Amino acid sequence: MKRKLFAVLCGGIALALILAGGRVLPTRAADQAKDDRKADPSQEDSGRDDLPLRDFMRQKLEASNMVLEGLCTDDFDMVKEGATRMNSISNSERWRVMNDAVYRQFSGDFQATTQQLVEAAEKENMDRATLKWVDATMSCIECHNFVRGIMVAEQPDSR
Image (tube, rainbow, N blue to C red; front, top):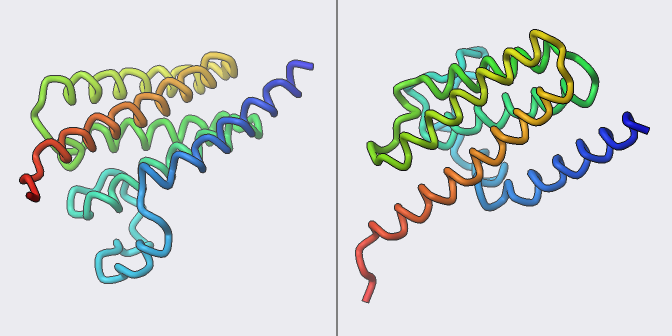
């Protein structure tokens, strides 16, 4: 019963991310149209500071997807690798898109949460790892909403 509930939870979260993903990140078609901006796929260095911001943030999404897949398949090594990448990305200089106190709080919370996710994966604690992944995901969505709000507020009036 617990496995079925967990499978339903994973499916529901994945669906929610897919539906929210269109608002948070650009479409694949938009990415493909910008081939000249894409990073060399042979370079797997998480958190590279020279990537365009969209590509940089896509690395975070890919790492998060790795965590989800690891959770759904009981692969704690995959969970740990994805969580470690997420944490590494959040410690990169490219991560700091603004110096706002609220943004710094979001960032610090995300870093702490991803570190706790790494620790839960090391202990093979499925329940804690799942909750920390959900916490990290919610942190991403809330921060993206905040940053979008700031960007809209800073746009010049188009009247």
